[in-house]
Amino acid sequence: MSQNGRFTAFLDRKPVWLLHVFVVGLALHNLVAAELYHAGLRGNALEAVSSWKELLLALGLVLVWRQAGYPHRFRPTRLDWLALAFGAFVVVYAVIPQSALGGGATHRGIALAARHDLLPVAAYFFGRALPLTTADVRRVGATIILVACGVAAFGIVDIYAIPLTYWRHTAIGWFTTQLGFDYKGTGLSGLPQNFIYNTGNEIPLRRLVSTFLSPLATSYFLVVALLLAASWRLATHARLRVWAPVVALLVVALLLTHSRSSMLALALALLAFAVVRPQWRVPLVAAAVATVVLSVAFVKVYGHVAPTTSFTTAELKEQRAHAHSAAGGQAVSGFQDASTESHLQSLRDGLRTDFHHPWGFGLGNAGSTAARTKVTIEAGESSYTELGAETGIVGGLLFVAWSLGLLVGTLRGAAWLGASFLALLALGLQTDIIGVPWLVFVVWTLAGWCVTTRDRSSVAP
Image 1 (cartoon, rainbow, N blue to C red):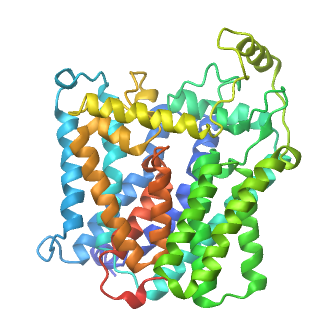
Image 2 (cartoon, rainbow, N blue to C red):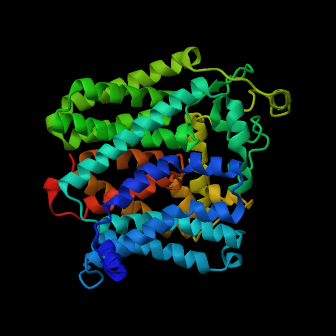
């Protein structure tokens, strides 16, 4: 076969393989990137390597739209128009001068924010034209479950067998120098504060961060995997001796992330699952109740089962200085899940900013992007208030309307996926959910496919 023939055959190949690459690669991305930084690959070179996911998504868009005969056969739906309208707002706000909006973002911050905001749209349209069969869906589901088991197992081994000192040496440069996050003053040598749960008595507890190098991102991934596992059991009557150990492993790992919000989101998602699949209502409602009970019980015993670690001398000095400062009170607790009141306060502050500045500040003035580029953070923690601060209230509402449309469509099509989407949208009230690449590249792609397909027999329960 000639070179042109091979290239044409490649273009004609169904790119479902990209979805498998995203499932596996994005679960490992932070860990591999941190190790590459530690090995000496830094700056623009590491930035180029880290862009593999965006390049593959761009390739996927070219392949699926070429094979589907777009744009000639493209018939936009209401969800498409909402996605395009939101994307248009992002593009417009990227080119409006910051001075006209009262923002202070840098050119780099605008570029980072544009990528952050547009990736869900790109992933949605990739899934929109991705033809998946029943066998394709099952294989993707199997890949998600297998990767989740690997992430869970590695995370458990990590917190019990790998000392925190290892991550102090390997991960700090990736977070601070490469990504630009400033974790000074956290009392953890520059690591993200959520690597530990600070008890306030100078004996911190480890939290499961696994390959995502984040307890929160890991917990969100595990929530999706557990909802898929529920569907696997109920729809296929998977053998209990195989299914039970898998779920037990995922649940233990999720508990060790010590993310109470993720457990509550999982319970909410199971209830939604029960509503749209009434034939499974009893086991799903029972699972939701068990999730809440287990979460409450584990919070009580966490201090007795979680592995302890220790502060360095410098960290202890910083912890004690903070405890005796004017701020007083507890030692630096960092990214541990804040109290409900703290999250509500952050959400109220973000909404107040959005309504007092309804036209937005422009891209790069909110959330992690503003933190990385050292400009004033106009809104943080919530995906919705961050988008409102960047693209104005109209832009934020367009994202909400599009998301709710996707939620309804996925609940009707693949209940586990719709339940996962509901859990993520609920978590988005207190965190930047579209800032977790695995969720965007996998869940939004599957959502785009789910609301597009007319062959419901190919949709997982």
